[in-house]
Image (cartoon, rainbow, N blue to C red; front, side):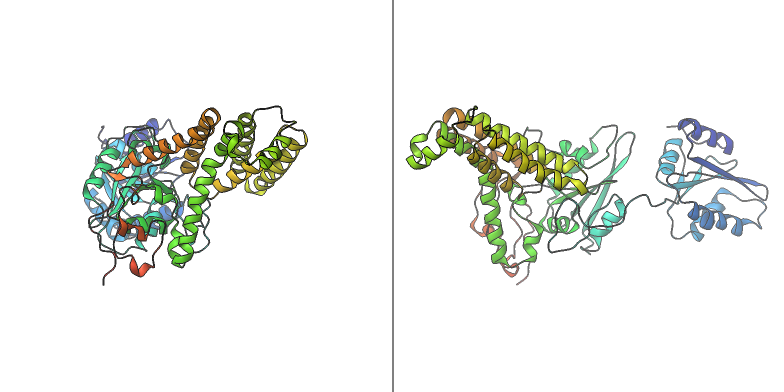
Length: 486
């Protein structure tokens, strides 16, 4: 750490040398009476209007009658006249450049080895818009943005509780990104909060550009395909999680937040479940579970029944399947893998392609590819149906990490069924259940409230009771369980 010099020119030259004489560094020197004053700022992150209309005008109008101005007097003048800006006193070059890069203008006084930092940042982010990754049918339409203070404000306006805390930590040796640990003090478990704080404070990395950079540091360290957190850009999802006792991680310059701990049931639930009638929500949740089972098991069961366990298939259906496969040159396993791979490629193309043309490419690609493959005798029609059902069921889920976990386990089911048939499918199901049951995330069982099973917790698991009946928070998240008074 190098402390500031007491010469204005030396300070300005040092800052320029630190940044390689970057073109966006600007300075302006003033002389008030017999005192030399300089302002230095970065044009790329600072607002010219704020600097000229507020800071410069305040300096010239307030102190123009003084012949000699001291550092303390100048700080008092700025602090008392610029009430809408943050003001700080800085003493070293690293802190000075950090504030310059954060949109501050630094005021230097000749003969003093300190400077005054005044916030004059410009708006470099988009406004509040509807979520682009999570479809909103009913509920609030706003979503988080890249502006850190705006994100905090979107939570504050929903939860007006003094126990709602925002603890910030700077992460990244070069980016110095604000990572905010958010929780409700009298609901969240203090042990979990402290563990998360320790992990974030121990992160030593060059830079953090998105919340995804720190997720691996927050995980348990095991190679688990299923995600241990919920990533969302919806403030209502975040606030609902906070009220349940969870901890939320906000990362500067990222619209995606991390909700910890994440459980399996979080990916079956949706925030919109609480905006609809309970009977409709219950039906929808069972539909999602059915879709999860279908997208995971359908290809494997088809391969097992047509290759190894043919005695389980009715004769008429088996004959029909055999006729369809007469011209297909590949084994069933290769046939299914080829078509699944083609669909996943089309899906990735749809995601990466601009919206104006992405949907057209995926629809045309699927129709042309499926029809051409069947007509050419490369793929049988029943496999097109099987893969279509599998893929459509997988589209029920929007979380990309959860989708990727389903992909990996689907492959395991496919390969075990190809070699062991229905026995392989059964063994794979047992392995999956054992894996999910054994997973813990900050001492929270991943399959809670199913394992361990508590009857009272089933009011908001698959079955959704009316909101007036949900008087307790989940037992596995907090000890402060009272949610609704009698």
